[in-house]
Length: 436
Image (cartoon, rainbow, N blue to C red; front, side, top):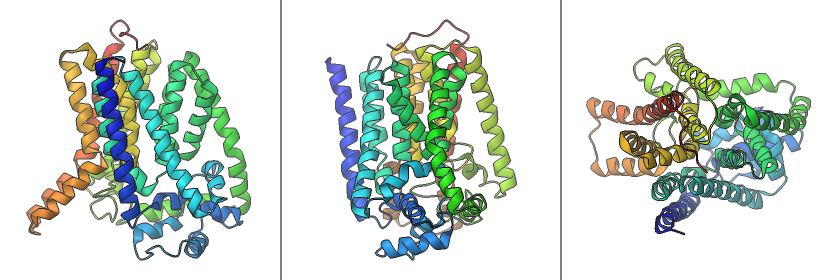
């Protein structure tokens, strides 16, 4: 192993160590510990007992009976009674619900940490072929900034980890069946996180399209039993799911992107473009329309470039680097979902190794994106603000709002546009050097 690869691996290991130790410490101390695992655990327990998992009263009854030690006066804890996952997710969550809380939550956390660190190592091993220190530093920064996924135990940790493992399996053409299964589970759990990554493989053609269709088939096969089970137990689940989503996203709700949101800002913040646009006009008809328009425009350009370009290894990573931040812009996403930015590291390493202004710009954009979207960065920022005891004047409140709502969605937009620009440029030139 060369000195550069060894140094890059040290950065990766350091980030992994910070990720595990700080995540475990905060997970034990936080009143919101494992709250996102409870969101999937108790509805699955409800379904096992032939209760409606989409009916708030049924889930609340079971979760209070089995998790009575929770501080139920905190709204972010009470929201576990409103289930907003699609029925295919039960394929993966019901086996955990068959276990008592103790072993179930330990196994869930182990899968989150294990899948993310394994995916990080695979990505580093690829990026290290171009820039091992840059790759290790960026991935270490991403992990060291991602403790929120351990604190809340959000399913995004498993979905994103499995998705990235599948991408590497497809890219390397090794352990393909395992990759298909990983991707299928990822799509069943969090389709809004990994669906556009799957779309790339579908549009890219060739063997990639074959893998995408195989993944879709396995996803359907895994999903059908859960869908049929839910439909039998809860025939009105579609209306109930819609009602639960509306309750969260209503004006002042925890998923409301507007200024009045009770959970959209601060640590664990929302990242979608609506958060920034609502600062100017707190009207869903306005901020949704503008967000969808920007997203659709970028997605159409990305899809056009993908369809007309000849696939190459380097273009694959440029395409994925563009779609990873774009995924988070049009609708509900939180800081947990930013771990998908791991897919931008190989493209950044490749551009850095080529040198020049674009390489330096890639590193700047990536580093800014990982810092501005990370949990630890914002935790330290808010601790810094509290220590200054700022006066509650109108001006200071407005400045704080600006600082809260603009950096994260805008840096994701910048990352999307930058990598989309580089991706489009690559199609008008000979195929870039291939990653081996």
